[in-house]
Each structure stands twice: as structure tokens, then as C-alpha cells.
Image (cartoon, rainbow, N blue to C red; front, top):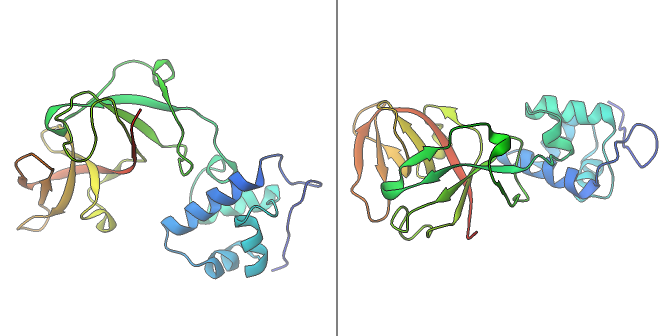
Length: 209
């Protein structure tokens, strides 16, 4: 396929190339792709694709659409979202998550991490004993999309874990003793063992407010 690189003219969109390049890099790394593999999927040379990630060139509108297709994300995640990150809930004692009621647009906004996506949201730690050794009271906890069950790559990771009784807690998740069951561990808390998990969301960023 021919290499089509966008500049400031033509069909290139007026978004900062550094933002777009960083977004492409994050999307590629999340999938474990090499730069060569991503370039091939985009129909670009490896050198041309590298220049986009480095912010030296922009993608054309057609290539933005192609990038969204191969990474299976909305185009806004390629060109750079400016949607505010909302604080949608709190982390209480025992790592228990409580989500706020109401419309998200009315919730308080939080600083936006560099690698945030359109699905990134934020929680605030409301109890100093909620996550000992991990976060203190009034710290911010960010996570991306919730996925059904437990993706294999999230085993051992700090996640928001929703179990069959409806509770959601922040814990590191590991395989349990039986297939389909999981153990949940958190500093300063008793392990929760052999539970069935409805969904998980991986924690992506933790910072003081």
C-alpha cells in the first residue's frame, strides 16, 4: 500500500501531532504491537509511522479512521480527547467502591493523565484506611473501561473487582483454587478467597489530589 502522510495542509486534522503521536503509541503498546507491525497494519513504512509517534508528522483523516479501526477504538482516542475526567465515585474503608448518583456531567473534574482515553474515569479515596500502602485519603484513583470477567493480562494487577454479590472493591486479583474463582488481596485487609467475579477494571493511575 502507498504511504500517505498528512501535514498541515490537505486532509490532516488540526490537532497537535504530539498528542496524536502519544495516543498512537499508547494504543500500540497496550496491544503489545511492535512499531513495524503497527506500521504494516496502517499501510505505512516503519520510518513514516515512527515519525507520527514522535510527533513529527500528522495523520490524514483517512489514516485516523484506519488507526481507529485497527485498534478498535473511537477516533477521538486517536486524535486526542479533551473530555474532562470525572470523579464518579469514592473508595471507602476496605477498598469498597461507591459510585455517585446523578449525571456524570455534574460531577467534579479531575486532572487528565497523559495516557487517558475516552473511557477513563476517576475515584477519590474517602478514608485513610481504604488502601493502606497504596493511597491516602483524598488521593485520586483512575481506571479505564470495565471488562467482563478477568482478562488474563490483569492477573496480579490492582483492579476494581465486581463480584457476584454486587460489591466492587479495589484489590489485586489472582487465580483461586478452582477454575472460575479468584482470590482478592489488599494491603492491611484479610484476603477474599474463591469468589466469582462479574467484571474488572484495571487501575491505571494513582496520584495525590
